[in-house]
Length: 294
Image 1 (cartoon, rainbow, N blue to C red):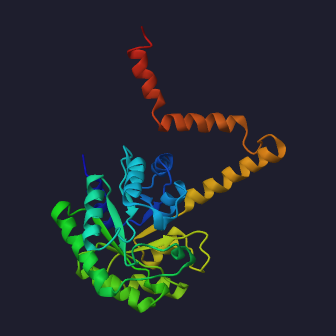
Image 2: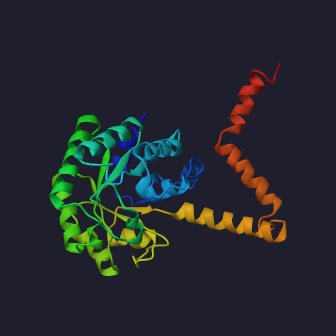
Image 3: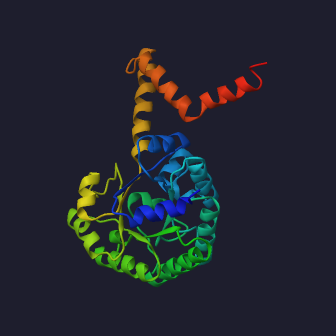
């Protein structure tokens, strides 16, 4: 069976644009696969929100365990948000090892201060010095080459917010020299978003951060592909849509004592789909051949 790391690397080396929605539970991962998308993502924001923990307090074990629950028997590569790697270069190398042991196909490692601060969510970026970031990426890539050369290392920089676009591009391009496979930055304007794929030496990931309150632009997949991006991480799509409609459903029941937005025929259809996803029919067959047939 082909390794998930190899699958992801082949996708990156192909001409295909890779849309990568974030799953916030295992069922979401199955929905991603159902609709024909080829990579799933586990972000710090979505994992933390699912556990009702702010991302800066999320542990390495929690993130990797969550990714395991999404990726288990999924058959798709899973990319995770490895944050600041939970420490210095030594800790980042440990994070990479744990990712590979767990069957994760790729991860992005960033230049934010560790431990991360809650003010990150207010768009306050505390970036480590460039040389410290370079050392981190270098050591992660060396460890990758020792363990699984197909594992995809994504160098992420947040310095567009603090030191500007030129410094962000500089950090991404230096990361290529150190062995990173892809780059990820956060353009502050349409002009920067258009320029980044041209200025970057690495294939770029664009993070579609729906609901952001600092004005970062959102684009369609077709627009991003035309601009030259290789991958789009849709970081909150399933989480936000699910939360919105669950909230509306409970509100309606509280106010009216009933729920009427979806008819029972749709509930029957969706329930059967979920049962198929979790493999209930196959379990019925096994029981009928063993215990239920007696």
